[in-house]
Image 1: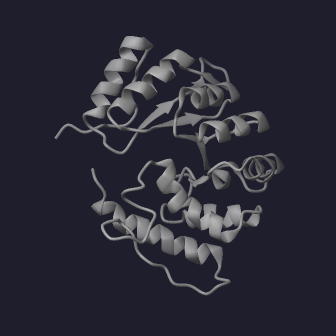
Image 2 (image 1 turned 90 degrees about the vertical axis):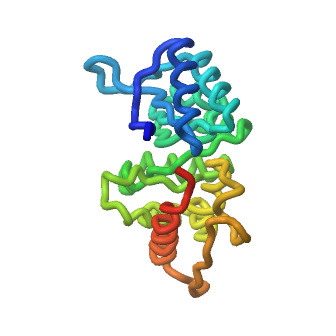
Length: 228
């Protein structure tokens, strides 16, 4: 069976078109673009695709009903991603208050990676508490899991609660908000007949990590039944 095998190179309008068409035939859940990276020996990341190239990728993928997610750590990479129409931006280290407002206008959701980036860093706390929350964007719970043990994703939910997000919103970031960001409204995120859903019962003041672990366990178990 011919399946998508991780990152591949794509360059220019023709190259991106071929890549998008090829991936659309193999992947039903979404495509991911690396919008910036370190050039040569530089430490800082810079944008790797032009805005026109990104718009093309989103347009071609959208023709097949496939959403596009963006990996972006630089400010310019994130700006181009938002204007191109991607669904989510992962990492988003360079997101500014202005870009968060732009995300709100374009209905683009940030995927949080606050645990990976270090909860002790004041700059990252400011990024989440004073920018993302204030902008009112739809936040999806990420984590970049792999830099810590798989199955421990609840640490991300716990960190978001500690930084000012109401616990119900933090749980939604891993369930119903994630559903919206992934455009999977007809598959997950609700307790409804025919959807991949379940109930988690807990006390009113339940610990965020315990609820998060339950949600993570549920997602890992259900993942086997999701479309390939």
